Image (cartoon, rainbow, N blue to C red; front, side, top):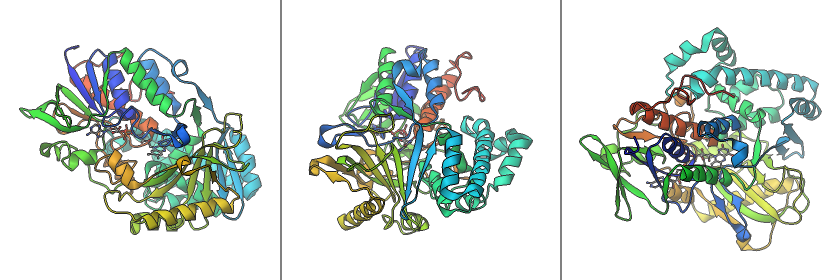
Length: 510
Ligand SMILES: Cc1cc2nc3c(=O)[nH]c(=O)nc-3n(C[C@H](O)[C@H](O)[C@H](O)COP(=O)(O)OP(=O)(O)OC[C@H]3O[C@@H](n4cnc5c(N)ncnc54)[C@H](O)[C@@H]3O)c2cc1C
């Protein structure tokens, strides 16, 4: 099969994983990306010349990467240095209160008891049990299934899974469901925020998304060298297996011949022949015809609203001895207004929640003086339209005021110490998205089933990335890369039964 040529469009997480697994199976793989290097949303910016992770920062579900590494004959620890974090996240509220959640569940329980009282701590324990049950119920029938449908999922849930879903009220939204677990509004807010991990509003996301809380409680790791080291590692492993990476090369068309994929044409003018193509960009680009007019119908699944975008500030700043941990969240009292602004009014939130990743913290050493930070607020995905400087400025001021209310005053050395990325910038980086960072929003109970699986409607074209099943987030995108590679190999009759992949009926183990 060495003569079977595959072009992977995009060196994001899913594209890198697909390329690695396909090359490992002996196929000839070329990866093309319009960016200058690998990673896609996993990117580093250089305020003051220092590398700051400016995309994903929370590394969870390491078992996905353990499995990917073992499928190509290596181990995660042999390829990248990772450290488990003791503090999962530190949370601050406007009223001065503060809560840390820990990797150790007992410590979290104590912290919640001190923060909100023993009765709320009991409710927290019950919530953790429910989130665990929801995760366990959906892992096999949904997350690991290559192409779940509602009917197939219901039939594989079993009586216990069905009872779990019935108990949370799957038709309920996450916010309402959390109201049945917690009486302290801050606890409800903290766990509602997990809907934003897949770019959704807690008021519209299904209650099942509480499983994301479980994913985080199962562990958060810090990657030495930043998340970018993970992308670089996947590329290095691909190179060893013969993958050819071509950067600064936008693909402007997927070529077709006799109703089947035949190659790609690059914006620079050259064409690459391909028997199969894996598309790792957002499916919105295919639907919009950016890869050719014949592919607008190539993606199955229902069109859903865009997920969240963001405004980020990558910086090198002095926190003036403020006690940040690695992952920090600054909350306001009125949480609903953020999502009303974004999803109902299409504008930047006037009262944003602020996430701060302090990348030099969490592994034992405190940075002396200035340190590397990523600050992020959620934003509407309207980067294809104008967003005024005034709107951006007032969002920045409101974010600063919120951090200052908790005592965090950031001091920049110079204007070169901060690089801002807006929805417009994300739209340029990720075509046809409006800056949406998580594919389609998971709004409503059926939204998770509206995502396409790895097989497109066009023979020879496969889909991988956060906009297809199982959805956004680094580990999920990695799984979708596995699913695309597995679908392609299965179609070629190359599936190796000894290789465990997410498609092999729940054989992914952790
Ligand atoms: C600011 C931010 C914070 C995040 N935080 C987290 C987090 O903490 N934890 C987490 O798990 N996830 C997080 N995410 C989400 C996570 O980063 C993504 O879900 C995941 O990385 C997406 O991977 P992907 O495979 O979809 O590829 P992408 O990263 O979307 O990459 C796609 C690649 O395709 C290329 N491409 C597209 N079209 C073309 C074309 N026509 N020709 C050539 N190349 C093309 C692009 O240049 C890009 O490199 C965050 C994302 C962002 C942006």
